[in-house]
Image 1 (cartoon, protein in one colour):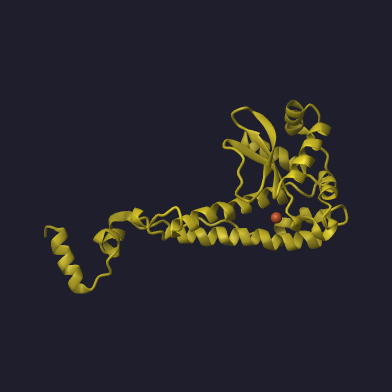
Image 2 (cartoon, protein in one colour):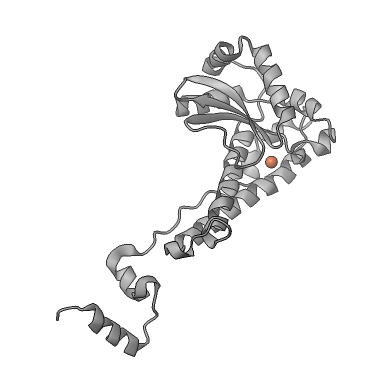
Length: 239
Ligand SMILES: [Fe+2]
């Protein structure tokens, strides 16, 4: 039997088929292969994921701080997944888009905040729990860009003090150099073509229990807790 849109609509209407965007029934859209894919979800971190960071207890950042911090990290993961599921069902009719307010705007803008926060904390906890002993390729890159490790530390410290949320050490793929970036929020991404190899959380929740408002003291302690092997591993993966 030859299919015609008119004939189909008459049949569908008579059968009470649910109508979707563009006047086509949902069942037909799906049968034509436009059914949305299942969203890929991120792993929600558990206490096992902060086991290495917990080694800083008594050496600068307390276990209590890290355990409270874990709940915030989990929040970014859960919201990332929630938004991914919502995006999988997004009505992409362009008439529904709007830059002032729209469902798409809300999902997309907050997705960058949620997933950005998830990644930032992945890197933060992955690169904590070490002995602060620098070496390997990252040391050479830091010396090339900043002259010495001490000069890099001075720049990193004042970057952290001057940021509202994060200090990022990025490896620039184009220039093949590292740079200390300031990040004011979870979705303040400094530049494209950078591999994030070290991320220092400077929101108060990362240190208030241990240092109250003395962020500089937290940063001094942080230097002694960096796992530079993890930083070098991230660099090797991202070069
Ligand atoms: Fe945080």
